[in-house]
Length: 490
Image (cartoon, rainbow, N blue to C red; front, side, top):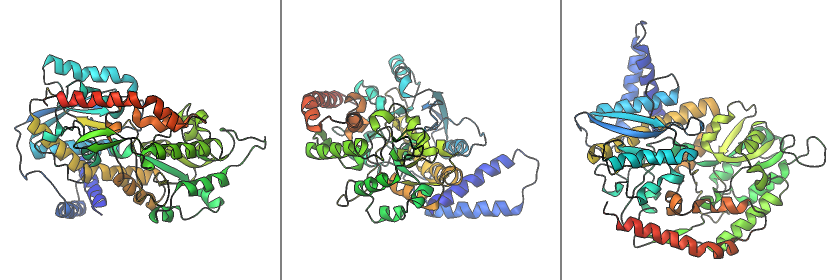
């Protein structure tokens, strides 16, 4: 496979770089292996960039999210040195390869970009643009708030980027096709950053518990398109058990069928559209009938199916559902893929599945990302758009061939995920990630993408009533968004 070959190449480069600092002589065998692997990788490699490019040492400063308090989001670019951590070193090597290829200098500037620190992060860009300096050429921003910069006129239109080829497989295509406004796209994402995969919502399942309950063939269900809400509901009921015999199900001692602290992922998973497109402009077009049906099912699932932990209680902290699953007392657990790092101490084997479909008539599995995913944008103060766009393309390309494969094949498979079929599932999940206007411009639309998360925390609220109460407000926000971006000359 292309990813495995590329991962082996990157590892050989990292290991050979480390060995250069030691006095032990190199043997012939590793050199031959690396040479063969590199040749194989080059033969299968795609590229949209010219073979030779020279930007004469142009410095590209990237404002990077550090988010040390939330290890689900690993720094996208700011690996400043090799540390022995495989992911860090893969990012570091990726940056060095791009520097050499384009003759640029990648200068990461790391700061806390978590949601709670959004004002400080946004002000870094605002102050730089207002000062007219060349502070930042590229920004990796938290999706739930970064769109504010676009409506403030702080960003360049990436549809005009001279070297970014959005048809290439390392870019997410839906963010281009479904989030542009009058030909303007201010944000991209894809293999340029590992939060693209780490933010994808998935279903974890306890393999040992499933086997004990006689639940088998879950991967085959996914392959056959039969991994649906009906199957999940059936299995969840089978799993619940009052382990301590006190007559009730407790979070800290009993066994559950399902737990999760959010429900935002079902918006995409069940293909509920909130926006559509007409002549290149997003139109608020909420499928109320589907919304009613979905919310009614979620309410029944969370509050009437005794095997599902009530979301209005579990949502108090993500650690509640995490600990239930990690301790082996929960069959299914929904969260984003980056949270797998917290499961490395779990004794039971577990697997990874996509979020289940609404029903078998739904053609494809569809994956929503956590709104903490990085969206990448370029401030208007950038003085060398050519060099920056070429670097973005090269970083995404190299990320596809080296960083993401390392994330898959080395970190996840060898340290966390417990079976080879989970890798197949992660391929499916990555390929099914979708973006729409309400996700990209969530900060301007009152976090509309989080609609089901808000409603599912209430056991009796009606979708149609909530929609009727808020539709005019949502429409005004959408009109303001379109008018504001349409008026910009960049």
